[in-house]
Length: 315
Image 1 (tube, rainbow, N blue to C red):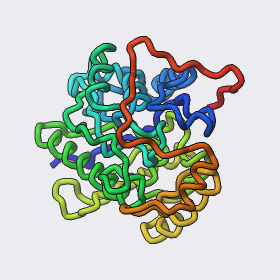
Image 2: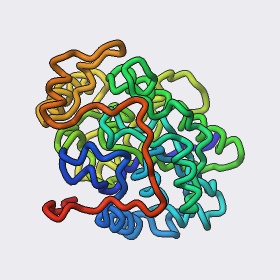
Image 3: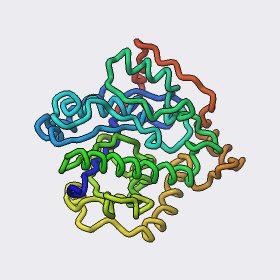
Image 4: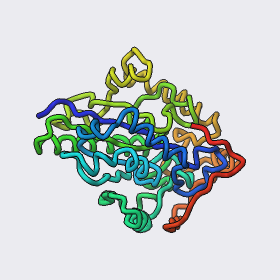
Protein backbone atom coordinates (compact mmCIF):
# COMPACT_ATOMS: atom_id res chain seq x y z
CA UNK A 1 0.00 0.00 0.00
CA UNK A 2 1.24 3.51 -0.83
CA UNK A 3 2.10 6.25 1.66
CA UNK A 4 -0.59 7.92 3.72
CA UNK A 5 -2.88 9.91 1.42
CA UNK A 6 -3.24 13.65 1.78
CA UNK A 7 -6.78 14.92 2.34
CA UNK A 8 -7.05 18.62 1.52
CA UNK A 9 -10.13 20.17 3.13
CA UNK A 10 -11.36 23.50 1.78
CA UNK A 11 -14.09 25.80 3.01
CA UNK A 12 -16.17 27.25 0.17
CA UNK A 13 -15.73 30.82 -1.04
CA UNK A 14 -18.04 33.60 0.11
CA UNK A 15 -21.71 33.02 -0.66
CA UNK A 16 -24.51 35.55 -0.47
CA UNK A 17 -25.63 34.05 2.85
CA UNK A 18 -22.24 35.04 4.32
CA UNK A 19 -23.21 38.71 4.03
CA UNK A 20 -25.23 38.48 7.25
CA UNK A 21 -27.75 36.39 9.17
CA UNK A 22 -30.61 38.21 7.43
CA UNK A 23 -29.58 36.33 4.27
CA UNK A 24 -29.77 32.86 5.81
CA UNK A 25 -33.24 32.54 4.28
CA UNK A 26 -31.73 32.42 0.77
CA UNK A 27 -32.14 28.90 -0.65
CA UNK A 28 -28.90 27.23 -1.74
CA UNK A 29 -27.16 30.59 -2.30
CA UNK A 30 -24.55 31.18 -4.98
CA UNK A 31 -21.10 32.67 -4.66
CA UNK A 32 -20.78 36.43 -4.53
CA UNK A 33 -18.48 38.17 -7.03
CA UNK A 34 -15.96 38.39 -4.20
CA UNK A 35 -16.38 34.67 -3.62
CA UNK A 36 -15.54 33.96 -7.25
CA UNK A 37 -12.42 36.11 -6.98
CA UNK A 38 -11.45 34.28 -3.77
CA UNK A 39 -11.30 31.06 -5.78
CA UNK A 40 -8.87 32.67 -8.22
CA UNK A 41 -6.78 33.90 -5.30
CA UNK A 42 -6.73 30.45 -3.69
CA UNK A 43 -5.57 28.92 -6.95
CA UNK A 44 -2.96 31.61 -7.51
CA UNK A 45 -1.48 31.39 -4.02
CA UNK A 46 -1.62 27.66 -3.33
CA UNK A 47 -3.02 25.61 -6.21
CA UNK A 48 -1.30 26.54 -9.44
CA UNK A 49 -2.10 24.37 -12.48
CA UNK A 50 1.30 22.72 -12.02
CA UNK A 51 0.60 21.94 -8.36
CA UNK A 52 -2.78 20.47 -9.29
CA UNK A 53 -1.16 17.80 -11.44
CA UNK A 54 -0.63 15.75 -8.27
CA UNK A 55 -4.31 15.71 -7.29
CA UNK A 56 -6.18 12.42 -7.56
CA UNK A 57 -9.82 13.27 -6.86
CA UNK A 58 -11.93 16.40 -6.34
CA UNK A 59 -15.00 16.05 -4.12
CA UNK A 60 -17.51 18.54 -2.75
CA UNK A 61 -20.74 19.01 -0.87
CA UNK A 62 -23.61 19.12 -3.40
CA UNK A 63 -24.63 22.68 -2.52
CA UNK A 64 -24.06 25.16 -5.33
CA UNK A 65 -21.46 27.25 -3.49
CA UNK A 66 -19.22 24.27 -2.75
CA UNK A 67 -19.53 22.81 -6.24
CA UNK A 68 -18.76 26.20 -7.77
CA UNK A 69 -15.76 26.72 -5.49
CA UNK A 70 -14.41 23.30 -6.47
CA UNK A 71 -14.94 24.03 -10.16
CA UNK A 72 -13.38 27.50 -10.20
CA UNK A 73 -10.40 26.51 -8.07
CA UNK A 74 -9.59 23.03 -9.34
CA UNK A 75 -10.52 23.18 -13.02
CA UNK A 76 -6.87 22.53 -14.06
CA UNK A 77 -6.90 19.22 -12.18
CA UNK A 78 -10.25 18.26 -13.69
CA UNK A 79 -9.22 19.05 -17.26
CA UNK A 80 -5.48 18.48 -17.56
CA UNK A 81 -4.18 16.27 -14.75
CA UNK A 82 -2.94 12.89 -15.96
CA UNK A 83 -4.34 11.13 -12.90
CA UNK A 84 -7.23 13.19 -11.51
CA UNK A 85 -10.79 12.03 -12.11
CA UNK A 86 -12.40 14.48 -14.58
CA UNK A 87 -15.54 15.02 -12.50
CA UNK A 88 -16.32 16.47 -9.07
CA UNK A 89 -17.76 13.76 -6.84
CA UNK A 90 -20.70 15.25 -4.93
CA UNK A 91 -20.89 13.86 -1.38
CA UNK A 92 -24.25 14.52 0.35
CA UNK A 93 -22.83 13.59 3.76
CA UNK A 94 -20.57 16.66 3.43
CA UNK A 95 -23.43 19.18 3.38
CA UNK A 96 -23.66 21.93 6.00
CA UNK A 97 -25.05 21.25 9.46
CA UNK A 98 -28.14 23.43 9.90
CA UNK A 99 -31.58 23.19 8.34
CA UNK A 100 -31.73 26.86 7.40
CA UNK A 101 -32.64 27.42 3.73
CA UNK A 102 -29.10 28.61 2.99
CA UNK A 103 -27.75 25.25 4.19
CA UNK A 104 -30.35 23.11 2.43
CA UNK A 105 -29.55 21.89 -1.06
CA UNK A 106 -31.70 21.73 -4.17
CA UNK A 107 -33.70 18.72 -5.27
CA UNK A 108 -31.45 16.30 -7.12
CA UNK A 109 -33.31 16.66 -10.43
CA UNK A 110 -33.03 20.44 -10.23
CA UNK A 111 -29.36 20.14 -9.30
CA UNK A 112 -28.71 17.79 -12.22
CA UNK A 113 -30.33 20.20 -14.68
CA UNK A 114 -28.44 23.11 -13.13
CA UNK A 115 -25.08 21.38 -13.62
CA UNK A 116 -25.95 20.18 -17.12
CA UNK A 117 -27.00 23.66 -18.28
CA UNK A 118 -23.68 25.09 -17.10
CA UNK A 119 -21.53 22.16 -18.25
CA UNK A 120 -20.32 21.58 -14.71
CA UNK A 121 -18.59 18.15 -14.58
CA UNK A 122 -20.30 16.82 -11.45
CA UNK A 123 -20.89 13.18 -10.52
CA UNK A 124 -24.22 13.07 -8.66
CA UNK A 125 -24.36 9.29 -8.30
CA UNK A 126 -24.27 9.49 -4.47
CA UNK A 127 -26.99 12.15 -4.23
CA UNK A 128 -30.41 10.67 -3.46
CA UNK A 129 -33.85 12.24 -3.58
CA UNK A 130 -33.85 12.59 0.21
CA UNK A 131 -30.48 14.30 0.51
CA UNK A 132 -32.02 17.72 1.18
CA UNK A 133 -34.68 16.58 3.66
CA UNK A 134 -33.32 17.82 6.98
CA UNK A 135 -36.08 16.83 9.39
CA UNK A 136 -35.01 15.60 12.81
CA UNK A 137 -35.83 11.98 11.99
CA UNK A 138 -33.80 12.01 8.76
CA UNK A 139 -30.17 11.10 8.09
CA UNK A 140 -29.45 14.75 7.30
CA UNK A 141 -30.95 16.04 10.52
CA UNK A 142 -29.35 19.18 12.01
CA UNK A 143 -29.01 17.37 15.35
CA UNK A 144 -25.45 16.90 16.54
CA UNK A 145 -25.49 13.10 16.73
CA UNK A 146 -26.74 12.87 13.15
CA UNK A 147 -24.03 15.27 11.97
CA UNK A 148 -21.36 13.23 13.75
CA UNK A 149 -22.62 10.07 12.05
CA UNK A 150 -22.47 11.49 8.56
CA UNK A 151 -19.10 13.12 9.25
CA UNK A 152 -17.79 9.69 10.23
CA UNK A 153 -19.30 8.15 7.11
CA UNK A 154 -17.77 10.88 4.97
CA UNK A 155 -14.34 10.11 6.42
CA UNK A 156 -14.92 6.43 5.73
CA UNK A 157 -15.85 7.23 2.14
CA UNK A 158 -12.72 9.33 1.67
CA UNK A 159 -10.66 6.47 3.10
CA UNK A 160 -12.34 4.01 0.74
CA UNK A 161 -11.68 6.26 -2.26
CA UNK A 162 -8.05 6.71 -1.18
CA UNK A 163 -7.65 2.95 -0.89
CA UNK A 164 -9.16 2.37 -4.34
CA UNK A 165 -6.85 4.96 -5.87
CA UNK A 166 -3.81 3.42 -4.18
CA UNK A 167 -4.78 -0.06 -5.31
CA UNK A 168 -5.09 1.22 -8.88
CA UNK A 169 -1.45 2.34 -8.82
CA UNK A 170 -1.58 5.89 -7.44
CA UNK A 171 1.34 5.96 -5.00
CA UNK A 172 0.71 9.51 -3.78
CA UNK A 173 -3.01 9.92 -3.32
CA UNK A 174 -4.27 13.47 -2.81
CA UNK A 175 -8.00 14.10 -2.40
CA UNK A 176 -9.71 17.48 -2.16
CA UNK A 177 -13.02 17.98 -0.36
CA UNK A 178 -14.74 21.38 -0.61
CA UNK A 179 -17.28 21.70 2.16
CA UNK A 180 -18.69 24.04 4.83
CA UNK A 181 -17.40 25.96 7.83
CA UNK A 182 -19.52 24.41 10.56
CA UNK A 183 -19.37 20.90 9.16
CA UNK A 184 -15.57 20.99 8.93
CA UNK A 185 -15.32 20.96 12.72
CA UNK A 186 -17.39 17.78 12.88
CA UNK A 187 -15.44 16.22 10.03
CA UNK A 188 -12.04 16.90 11.60
CA UNK A 189 -13.09 16.64 15.26
CA UNK A 190 -11.09 19.83 15.75
CA UNK A 191 -12.98 22.41 17.80
CA UNK A 192 -10.21 24.91 18.48
CA UNK A 193 -11.47 28.43 17.71
CA UNK A 194 -14.68 27.01 16.21
CA UNK A 195 -16.56 30.18 17.16
CA UNK A 196 -13.87 32.61 16.01
CA UNK A 197 -16.03 33.51 13.02
CA UNK A 198 -19.76 33.06 12.52
CA UNK A 199 -20.29 29.36 13.21
CA UNK A 200 -16.77 28.31 12.27
CA UNK A 201 -13.06 28.87 12.71
CA UNK A 202 -12.39 28.50 8.97
CA UNK A 203 -12.10 31.50 6.66
CA UNK A 204 -13.73 31.37 3.23
CA UNK A 205 -11.45 29.36 0.87
CA UNK A 206 -9.12 28.40 3.72
CA UNK A 207 -7.61 24.98 3.18
CA UNK A 208 -5.91 22.58 5.56
CA UNK A 209 -4.24 19.24 4.92
CA UNK A 210 -4.80 15.99 6.80
CA UNK A 211 -3.72 12.37 7.00
CA UNK A 212 -5.74 9.53 8.45
CA UNK A 213 -4.90 9.09 12.10
CA UNK A 214 -4.40 5.35 11.59
CA UNK A 215 -3.59 3.10 8.66
CA UNK A 216 -5.95 3.62 5.74
CA UNK A 217 -5.31 0.17 4.29
CA UNK A 218 -7.96 -1.40 6.53
CA UNK A 219 -11.04 -0.49 8.57
CA UNK A 220 -9.56 -1.02 12.04
CA UNK A 221 -10.33 2.60 12.93
CA UNK A 222 -14.11 2.64 12.69
CA UNK A 223 -14.18 6.42 12.99
CA UNK A 224 -11.54 6.94 10.26
CA UNK A 225 -10.31 9.99 12.16
CA UNK A 226 -8.18 12.62 10.42
CA UNK A 227 -5.20 14.47 11.86
CA UNK A 228 -3.88 17.75 10.49
CA UNK A 229 -0.30 17.72 9.25
CA UNK A 230 2.21 19.93 11.03
CA UNK A 231 3.02 21.61 7.73
CA UNK A 232 -0.62 22.64 7.47
CA UNK A 233 -0.74 23.85 11.06
CA UNK A 234 2.50 25.81 10.64
CA UNK A 235 1.03 27.40 7.53
CA UNK A 236 -1.66 28.96 9.70
CA UNK A 237 0.69 29.98 12.49
CA UNK A 238 0.29 27.05 14.90
CA UNK A 239 3.21 25.18 16.44
CA UNK A 240 1.35 22.56 18.48
CA UNK A 241 -0.21 19.34 17.25
CA UNK A 242 -3.95 18.78 17.13
CA UNK A 243 -5.42 18.25 20.56
CA UNK A 244 -6.58 14.78 21.54
CA UNK A 245 -10.18 13.65 21.20
CA UNK A 246 -10.91 13.96 24.93
CA UNK A 247 -9.83 17.60 24.93
CA UNK A 248 -11.75 18.19 21.72
CA UNK A 249 -14.91 16.95 23.42
CA UNK A 250 -14.47 19.60 26.10
CA UNK A 251 -14.01 22.27 23.44
CA UNK A 252 -17.04 20.97 21.55
CA UNK A 253 -19.36 21.86 24.41
CA UNK A 254 -17.89 25.36 24.67
CA UNK A 255 -18.10 25.94 20.93
CA UNK A 256 -21.72 24.79 20.78
CA UNK A 257 -22.52 27.49 23.31
CA UNK A 258 -20.42 29.90 21.30
CA UNK A 259 -22.50 29.22 18.19
CA UNK A 260 -25.69 29.70 20.16
CA UNK A 261 -24.38 32.98 21.56
CA UNK A 262 -23.88 34.10 17.95
CA UNK A 263 -27.57 33.49 17.29
CA UNK A 264 -26.93 30.30 15.35
CA UNK A 265 -28.44 26.85 15.66
CA UNK A 266 -26.97 24.77 18.49
CA UNK A 267 -26.91 21.19 17.13
CA UNK A 268 -26.20 19.72 20.56
CA UNK A 269 -29.61 20.93 21.79
CA UNK A 270 -31.46 19.14 19.01
CA UNK A 271 -32.51 15.52 19.19
CA UNK A 272 -33.42 13.17 16.37
CA UNK A 273 -37.05 13.06 17.47
CA UNK A 274 -38.16 16.54 18.48
CA UNK A 275 -37.17 20.18 18.61
CA UNK A 276 -37.53 21.99 21.90
CA UNK A 277 -40.05 24.86 21.78
CA UNK A 278 -37.53 27.22 23.34
CA UNK A 279 -35.03 26.52 20.56
CA UNK A 280 -37.69 27.17 17.91
CA UNK A 281 -38.51 30.49 19.55
CA UNK A 282 -34.81 31.42 19.53
CA UNK A 283 -34.53 30.61 15.82
CA UNK A 284 -37.63 32.62 14.98
CA UNK A 285 -36.36 35.58 16.98
CA UNK A 286 -33.35 35.73 14.66
CA UNK A 287 -35.46 35.36 11.53
CA UNK A 288 -33.98 31.93 10.81
CA UNK A 289 -36.90 29.54 10.54
CA UNK A 290 -35.87 25.96 9.71
CA UNK A 291 -36.23 24.98 6.07
CA UNK A 292 -39.35 23.19 4.85
CA UNK A 293 -38.54 19.53 4.29
CA UNK A 294 -40.62 19.49 1.11
CA UNK A 295 -39.19 22.71 -0.33
CA UNK A 296 -38.32 22.60 -4.03
CA UNK A 297 -35.78 25.19 -5.06
CA UNK A 298 -36.15 26.72 -8.50
CA UNK A 299 -32.74 27.47 -9.96
CA UNK A 300 -33.48 28.98 -13.35
CA UNK A 301 -30.58 29.14 -15.75
CA UNK A 302 -30.46 32.94 -15.77
CA UNK A 303 -31.30 33.44 -12.10
CA UNK A 304 -28.98 35.84 -10.29
CA UNK A 305 -28.83 36.57 -6.59
CA UNK A 306 -27.89 40.26 -6.51
CA UNK A 307 -25.83 41.70 -3.71
CA UNK A 308 -27.97 44.08 -1.62
CA UNK A 309 -26.77 47.63 -2.14
CA UNK A 310 -26.83 48.38 1.58
CA UNK A 311 -24.46 45.54 2.48
CA UNK A 312 -20.70 45.84 2.39
CA UNK A 313 -19.02 42.66 1.24
CA UNK A 314 -16.43 41.35 3.67
CA UNK A 315 -14.23 38.29 3.46
